[in-house]
Length: 267
Image (cartoon, rainbow, N blue to C red; front, side, top):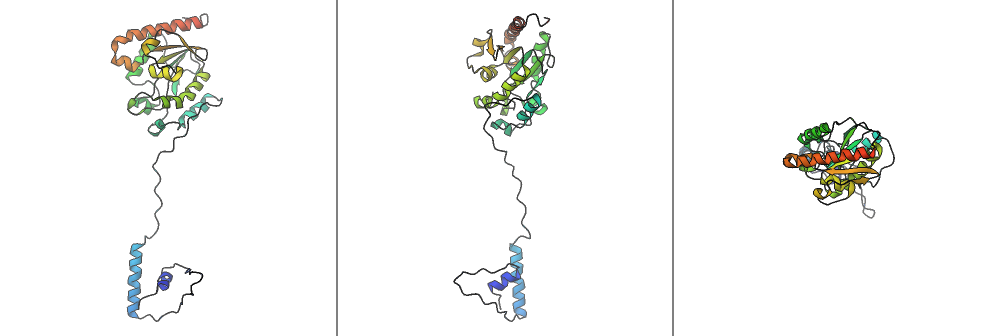
């Protein structure tokens, strides 16, 4: 004799048995179970045991990246450590999804010179420091020619703090998302002159999208600080003849700095 549905559920430890309000209560009379019925009951339970898992496995942790949050239009006043924490935790654009770490910048926190590039590359993403590859070596040589060096009255940063995929040029929206951090860096550092390295840096800080050739040799201003434009070192590695133009730009920047702070700096 086979078990009723209710008896089967009882054997499985599933109770109580719910019935419709208007339905007659199910009879729970216990039939006589013979040897054949007992064998059938055990086989039925074995089938149920094979179908039902022994226990429910915990849900696998989600591998999806945290959602991108809207960029901030401004940052509250704060000190340098607070700014670094903000940058490290930033998720204002999709660049945060593939970065190894954010790269705020490096150098003297009371600089005369602030150099701003475009964005971190692959090596910078690993080391957490801007301009550490071949372009960085060229930049160091350019600084040395001016008798200055990174970390000594020099701070080096980028328009965006996370590496663009494939080392591509940062997009307008990405630079806009990072601009509050760049603006706060400038406000805290208070450099005496800013040198923009490449067209993307010019667009990020000044909002000017003209050709770099048309912007060279001219003095701009940001928050009362003189700004000079030149080529990005990575561009110079591919266009060696333009190194002379970049050197002319740096000499122009030094003259601009001298005229701005003439008696204060021993040049």
